Length: 111
Image (cartoon, rainbow, N blue to C red; front, side, top):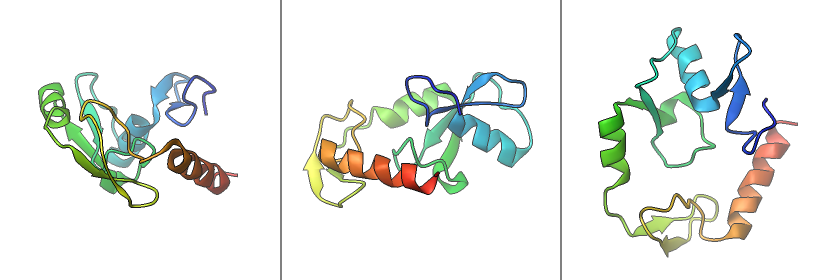
């Protein structure tokens, strides 16, 4: 894994280039390199969930449209509590505590 600002988000591929991890996972699954104009969307909104079933190929136009839909009530990805948020923010958790607990659970899985 690359040790950049978001080490869980990037990796080094076979060509020794830093790539976005979700793109790398999908490329391996499909057996081909994705073109640069293809976006890979996390269906559940959790950018740490890189399961194949959670990744969707979109055009840039489709991706932008999808992220600008107005939604105001969300469910915390960790504890399930419902909370309201600004739709332009990418928060998936009701609190920093839930976000940290989720991040720590992922670290334990990869040790």
